[in-house]
Image 1 (tube, helix red, strand yellow):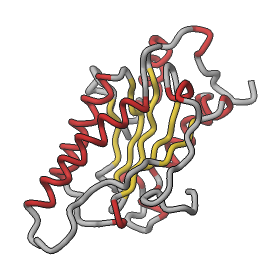
Image 2 (cartoon, rainbow, N blue to C red; image 1 turned 90 degrees about the vertical axis):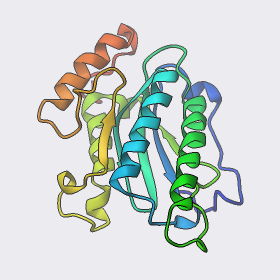
Image 3 (spheres, rainbow, N blue to C red; image 1 turned 120 degrees about the vertical axis):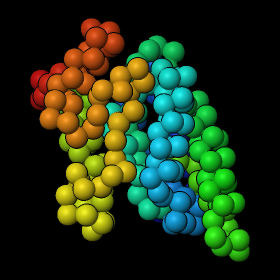
Image 4 (tube, one colour; image 1 turned 180 degrees about the horizontal axis):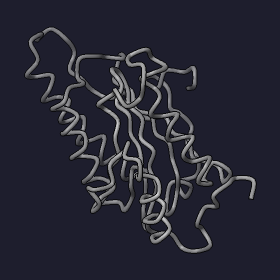
Length: 203
């Protein structure tokens, strides 16, 4: 991540067109002051609900997300020409911040600052070679392994705050043995032929 503090400086963005259409973007959003205490099963459900609405509104899917104690990761893919991930993330962040304020108001400590996201998210637009199926799955698994690297669990499957949100397809569940086969079949059916990723980045 960049060394500057996004609370006090503006992180550079690529041209807005890079986030539109059939874009592949890894987003990282951090709690203000690296606050902890917001993550719970109830908050996870609310997170999924809000992400589902934002993804459906702006025609995108999230093949994997991972919530951590003070930040979270989203891997988003556009599924239509009019998909716009900048608008999607603004919509999602606005509603998630409202949910975080509700969590803060119901917390035991009234002296603590309300939970809020930092003012700007980090993003990484995937390069062509990282969009190939094998390379893309490595990016997804890297995201899912965050709790292991943080020594919160010994295996990614033990972390209950990792999942996927594919609007209209609740049966596509992260961690199932057939997840990737089913996801790619669906993905290829939605992406124009000329934009479909190869299996291997070397091809």
